[in-house]
Length: 326
Image (cartoon, rainbow, N blue to C red; front, side, top):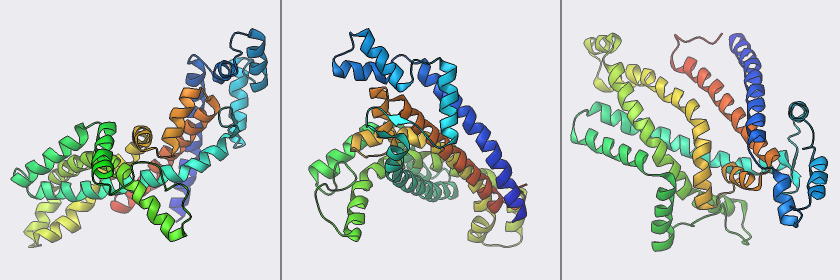
């Protein structure tokens, strides 16, 4: 436990530096892009042609200060967990983000868990039946799942299961205007989550399937596997006791890498299904030039990716005792 505590302490210090660097880069990139919330607000209020009105808005929101002063103030506010004020939504950025986090986490966790399990099963099956019809069929399914664009797949699922069959709702996270018990509400949310979860799962399942197949084939050729077979162990025992744990290491690595890309993919899926998560909120923030909100979402996404990679390192040590956490 002491080693794990030291490891976590060191990684948290490193993570703080990484997140600080990301915050600076995000701030500079966002502010170097043309346009800001003042132009949008002034245009909506009909004052875009009045330079005095635009300048007063800039002074009100602190956008008239030099860039380095804005950056220093932003970093100080981040340290105090003050992400600023959303001009578009009229509320604190942190409150707005925290209200959308549960929906995004629900979609992310269910999608990545389902993709991991399906990829594990299909990858092991393909590796054990390499160069057979089963292996070729799994490879074809994985290729199609990876090649089909997420938005098109989502739309086709809506057409099939919502419009034609009427089995599942086409969008949103729950039925609006219906008074439900907690259990009925959970079931309603689960029904709404099926289509967006399946859309994301099929895409990432393809990556895990191909990776698991290749990893299984590589580990199967190692000396310790041949030794286990020479000792008379059954094929099932060899696979489950010796091959699977070692073959899982690249899969665990991929989880840490895909958390960031999963947030990016969730933008399209959330837009297609009207899912009220961070991806959709980020898209709305970009359109409205709501820089404070966009920076808050980017920073939270960075924290999620860093945390996921720390958990991946701990999972590595659990899967392979030769790997130590120090």
